[in-house]
Structure formats: structure tokens, C-alpha cells
Image (tube, rainbow, N blue to C red; front, side, top):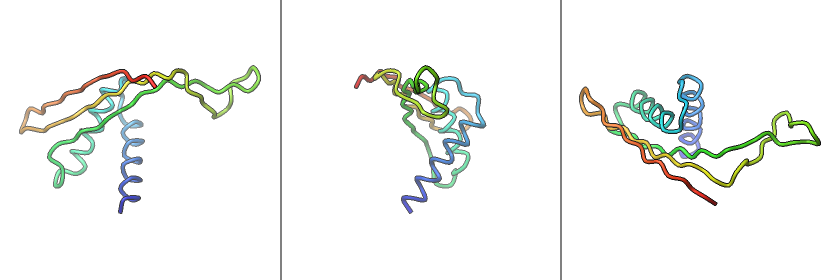
Length: 102
């Protein structure tokens, strides 16, 4: 069950990323919340997700960028906690943004 749930969650994240036009981690988090609430209205009353954004760059092989390899550009990440509480016709949404250095 846990493996199935994780695969479903990962697939939902990819599907939302492909379908939506989110340009920030905050917008993407809210889009994910909306998608889960629309997809599972009988079992979810609210949704909360955390999106962690880390800068990556193409890995270099010699002087050329690697075809599919990446490396961390920076040790700094941005974490966004987004939540959506659907109250009748006027949903409440909020996000908390914080910088993380590792």
C-alpha cells in the first residue's frame, strides 16, 4: 500500500507539473493542493504540501554539458509550505516561504 501510494503521489506530481503553468514553487504547491482536493474529494477535506526548490546546473564533461547529468548549483534551497482549505465557495490558501542553507 505504501509503495502504491508513493507511486501515485509521484505520478500526480509529474502530471500536475506537465498540466499546469506554475512558475514559482508557491504556485506549484497550491496547484498540487487543488489537484489532490479535486481528485479525492471523498477522503480529503484540506491539502498541505511542501515544495523544496534547489538550483541545479548541467554537469560538465570536459568543456561540454552532459546530456542528462546535473549537479547542485548551490547548497541553498527554498522551502515553500502551501495549504488549501476549501470552505464552501471561497477557499483559503496560504504559503510559508523559508530559505534553507545546508
